[in-house]
Image (cartoon, rainbow, N blue to C red; front, side):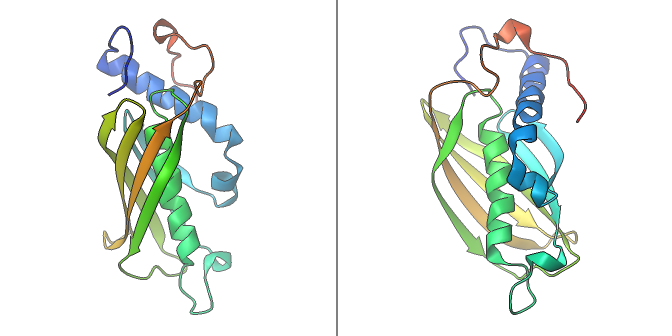
Length: 163
């Protein structure tokens, strides 16, 4: 979990995760361009989905690996920033296990495995709408200075705002 001077209640931690998503989303032009959408967000976790569009396929008429990587990386970003601490990737690795095809909806679920000091480890599973695993992604995070929502005090966790 995060290193707050006073621990957050489960409700406050959830509200903070949602508020952090709501603050990051308007600035996330790549996710918006790819029409990635939020399925769920919670402390240390995020699930996002993306429809494989015709402009996302490669010369084999399969979803381009870079699109799958971007979906997984985006879920990673939202899960590791869910504590309102600016966090970036320090390393990541992806294994492509099965092809994804045009018209399929891919879902990337990011789960925090470890969080200690400034570093964290997150596992992201990308599945198609049938539940078949398409890719496994592991991201390592590093906390940098600042907050996603600058100056937010834990007592000021805002109520959820609609997108």
